[in-house]
Image (cartoon, rainbow, N blue to C red; front, side):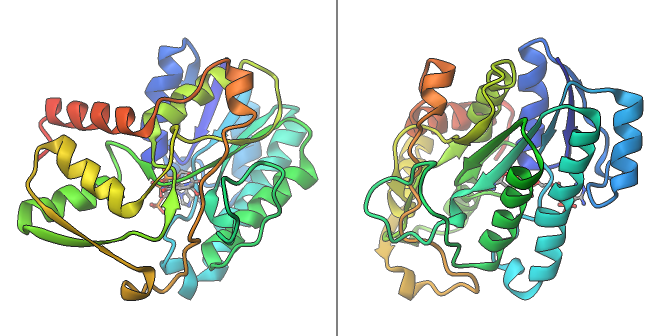
Length: 285
Ligand SMILES: NC(=O)c1ccc[n+]([C@@H]2O[C@H](COP(=O)([O-])OP(=O)(O)OC[C@H]3O[C@@H](n4cnc5c(N)ncnc54)[C@H](OP(=O)(O)O)[C@@H]3O)[C@@H](O)[C@H]2O)c1
């Protein structure tokens, strides 16, 4: 398929492009300055000239704490930017792949969130992403709306890199142990997308690595797998105040992605180990 990737300089996009190419898709990933999702006319002109079979939208406003002070900006990119993409896809008659977040939930549920559960974001970023979801549902018939969580990738700021950075500077770190979620390697998610777009099975999906954990246990596993000595101290969310509230539980149930792909995404510990092996091979510190 001929795939247009928006937000080409982001963490997910940087794994998306090679993963799509590996599956023999033809990928066009313009620089963000050349494909601003806030400009409907630019999007429409690009679609007219590129004529893709599908758009994969990796563009987003992703600063969870920053969104508390600039909610309008977050809603512009994560809401109206997505509306523009939907309108452009509608006009061209092609599907949109769009990513949403576990932060559209309030975290009060006991057990994993399914695609049937009601949304109720507790922070500005979650509200902005929910607005984007609504535009997809309001405007499109052909879409893959994929909720994902706790992303880490080779070329972006993420929890794994933060922990490894701290591991080089100190011998002890305190990490929140009362928030549960599903760590997800961007490479695993991109591999799933490269297959999903061939399916024609449009709808809402949860797309994460298999299994769930807390930030604390995730940190312990990062240092263990990286072979770094570090004392990890569990703390509560109350002991680590941030501008944005986070859901206590944002574990996502993989139904129906596993059924459509005919396989589960790799367990998060395996994905982490492979990620750490690759970054070492690439000479990252
Ligand atoms: N990271 C996570 O843990 C996580 C968790 C759940 C869901 N998600 C979702 O997964 C998707 C990918 O996230 P990510 O971590 O790869 O995000 P990212 O690294 O922040 O990448 C997003 C990219 O979009 C760009 N962008 C912003 N406004 C744009 C515009 N108007 N037009 C074109 N590009 C624009 C950003 O550029 P600038 O940097 O210059 O603004 C950035 O390069 C997002 O939809 C996100 O909400 C992420």
